[in-house]
Length: 393
Image (spheres, rainbow, N blue to C red):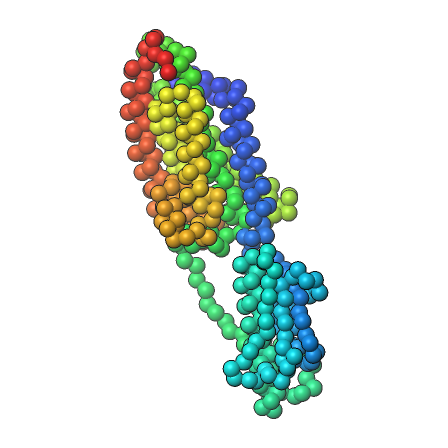
């Protein structure tokens, strides 16, 4: 009876605090939508089309074939004459020198603002298109190809002669899945995790207010057990974390398509998501309890909690995908519980993982919750017992 009354009290206090509700729900929602939109052209299953410039000093059947083969490697791309575009320059003797050994290929030039991904895509496309053009030149030179064969038939023949079936398998390994995630698969779990960890701020601030106002001392005078008092702090925020988990996943599934972004799909066993939600919620609430017991004022709780959350997010792959981090930063990321949670999410969303595949990550989160929760409980108990009418911070 007393526990339920304390839980209702915590919920009412939280509902009367618009700033806490904004931090827990509005902020991660905005981050999720903004970052998913910002990364939609970088992390996606289908690369964006390119605009290129192609210089052909002496047009010929070979240069025409090269152009068709190049555009076939870059679906949706187009050619233009703008000077500020990546440029492919063919030699004046392009047709005559196709069979030369060694062979000098086209010259590629890039504007300064061209990103590394575009450079790599264009270099690979030019390499394949040139190989197909040289192959057809060899077949024509050896008499195996009719000189009057139409362009589309030549291109199809080149594809058949250069195409191979390559078997692929998905490996579930830490840190490697983010490079294959699209904007929704990476942004939704990343900012969901970030938002859930902010639960430590209202937890710590509420504890400081109760201590400074003398409420904790009144609870002691009423004979409330410390177990009931701690549970009254943990249960409401545990429920809020689970609500955050469900609402932000639902936003990824149903909300992102409404603004033109890829919808988030949730493959795998629902029990895996339930285990991850519970493990992550326990980890965040345990950290919040520890912070509430360590901080000596509301201002200190805000500074420690906000700073710690940002640091864990920065090194844990939330703000910057681990796939683009240097090796030293990837190793440092393994100390962040946000990294464990994000790896578990990517294992489910990208790697098509099962409950067994995310168990090691959930075990880390539960161990983190046990250590921080146990330490926070000891410090919390000491703080409550030492609270007196004359206590000031």
